[in-house]
Length: 217
Image 1: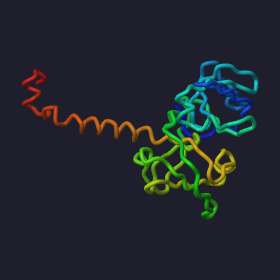
Image 2: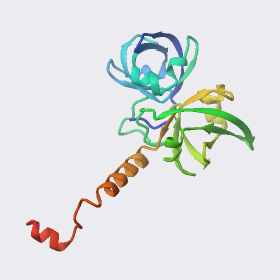
Image 3: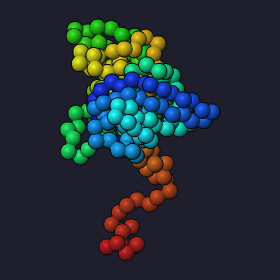
Image 4: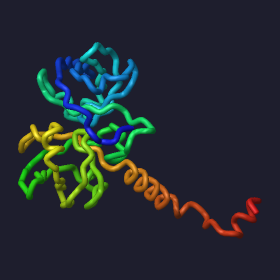
């Protein structure tokens, strides 16, 4: 679990793609402090497990499912990536709960200035937009951001200067892909509501009579 508050910008040193998997080696300093083999690090919002590490580099395996649903396969040597260590219970939750399990990929299609902020318009699949709402949370390449507005095929977010300067979004232009993870709590609520609705015709009403009949009271 992560917060979406990027700790540092790492640099891709190697990406080895195999037919159905890959290995990614990234240079980082801050995120390796206290990190052990088997720990999780989010790379552009993707939760990955440290396989090997040295003083300033670490290597992770990337499974076929991850390659299919994220933009990691488009990285190359020298690419900058957002890095965050897994959440600790004593850490301030400055962003929102981010699982590191990317839902899909969006595309930056417009960037405009609004005062000191940069507003990004990002296209997204309808299945992801269904879980977004104005003032809600979204993780973009692992960055926790607040949604401004949601339309039929895109949503908008605003970046303060610090986020623009300290994350990869400041390096990305129009037409660039981004990893998207919608709000974790919202997905669970929608899932449970859908299950309850689908099964409502098959379950008896929960009443005092029903509880007494089945020995609960």
